[in-house]
Length: 320
Image (cartoon, rainbow, N blue to C red):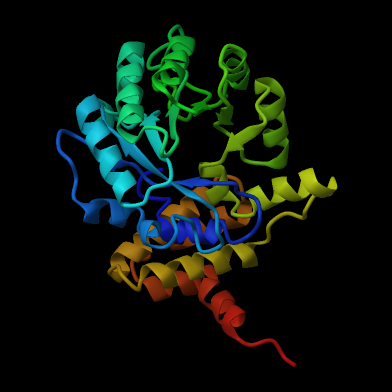
């Protein structure tokens, strides 16, 4: 979720009950120990208890292929206060893969093992090391081998995205393959991929046999999805569909947070990026996206979304 799930987004998404933990965007590791400012830029929560404002833990994610460099940066992160290290072997981006990162390592399970083992050795038992993989690079034949390599290297939990790298994000997600992996591992396995709704959540759990799921694009498409799942598990009741007014309000809050540190043209692009995720599963969000997608002024964009009005309404004190 590079470029999407920053600290502001994590704060907004975890404000309501639902998430047990979150993960940062990846810190790209090449061949050197990165300075503290890089870690704090990706994970400002390091200076605030390593949790979101609502208290949800944040794991710091590393992406790279050199075991020694990953180990050095994991140690650096630990010294800065990181409470969990997550290793990204799932990113399907062509640029990342061309530079030997993300899912490119899934072509050789021994490289997955070497990376996890090096990081585990660097941080010892001080903090957990977790990992995320896909079902393979161009095929699924090594899916179980890569999963076991991560476990044998010292990973305490494994997230599995239910597609290969070459499948990208094209449906369907093969949740049943996650189940094949889970049955052979002794560590918790978390299902990921194409969980857009409460129904998808239950289907993913049923086919994978996993107790937990990870939300990515689905949480952006419906910022209330985690709460919807938690509420149903707790009460058996189904919450109503998230209305546009709530979606517009969270986009306005997001813009207000981002514009404190970023130029407005950048904030405009980020708001459109989030709205683009929303439109995948909501007709009103799709209509709004097509109406504003060529607007480059932030205030005009928020007005077009009706988001500025919703945020002003939220900021007004309730009548006594």
